[in-house]
Image (cartoon, rainbow, N blue to C red; front, side, top):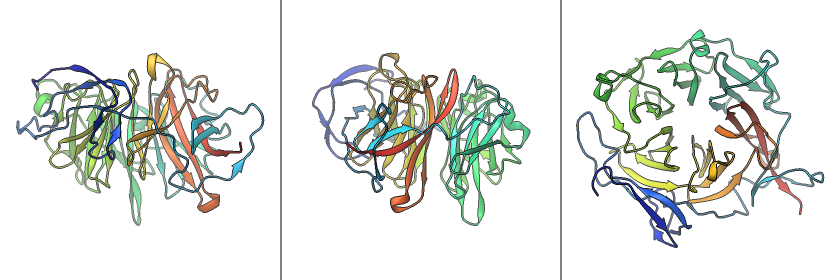
Length: 391
C-alpha cells in the first residue's frame, strides 16, 4: 500500500483476526480507515519494522451478564433514578464523591488527568493553575496538594503512576503547555524536569506538546507528543533523559492523544483520537499489531486498564454528541458498555469527557466499583458507581 493512502472501508459482517484484543468475531457495520504500514518505524535510524497491522477493525457491541468481580448486592433504586450502561456494567451517579475543594470557586478548564494510588486508596486530579488535587476517605474528602511549584504552571494533561514495593509510588506527567515531562513521587514535593527533545524531527522544529506518558518499569518511561509531532518516544530515568529514539508521526495518527502500557502483553495501547481508534504496538520490535475502531465520529482520549477491561473516555460521541465512556473487554474484543454521564446521568457540564479512572474498594460482597471522570469545557469532575439493579 503506498504511503499516505487513505481509503474508507465499509466493514459488513466481515470476519478478521484480532491479534491482541481477542478472538475472531463478526464486525459491526462501521466506516473505518485503512492506514499505511510501517508507521511504528524508528525514524531516527530509518529502520522499517514489518509487517504492521494496517486494517482497522470495528469493535462490536456485546452486553455481558457477568464481569471481572462478583456482581454488587442487588439494590432497588428510587423511582426515576437514572442508570447508564448495559448488562453487568450499569452505573448510577455518585454525587457525594470527589468534591472540589472549597478554595476553588469555579472549574472552567479541566483539560486534565486522573490517577489512582491503589496502595493508599487515594485518587488525584489536576487543574491548571492549581496543580494536584487529592481525594481520600473513599473519595469523600479532598485537598489541594502543596507540591512543587512547577505543577501549578502550564497544564498537567496526562499522567501515569508506578507502584514500588517498599517505596512511595512514582508519578510521571506530561505538561502540554510548558512542553515538559515531570517525574516525581506521590508526595509531589519535588519534580525532575525533562525539557523538549532536540533530536530527529525536533532538531529543526522543537515544538513539543506532550499529551501522555506510560511507565514500563522502574527505569523506562514512554511519552506521546499528541499535540505537536505525533511521535512516541522512550525515556530513561535515574538520570532522567531521552533515549534518542522516535516513532510514529502524522501518518500513524493525526492526534496521538494517549499512551497506555499493557504489561500482560508487553504492548502499548495508543488512543488515536482523530481516527477514533485504539492502536496496539508491541514494545519490541515496535510493530502495529491491532487497530480497533469505535463508531464513526467517536474521539477516544485515554485508556485505563483493569485486568481484561479497558476504560475509554471520549471527548465526543457520534454526530458530535456528548462524550461517552466505553468499557471494552480485551479478550472478546468487544464494547460491553457505553456510559453517558451527561445524557443519562444528568452531569450537565460533561459534554467532553477527557479522562477516566477505575476506583475499586473492598473485597468479596463488600467490593465496590467506581469510575471517576473529568470533563473539559466547561470543566468538572464526577464519579459513577456500579450497581446491580433489581428488575
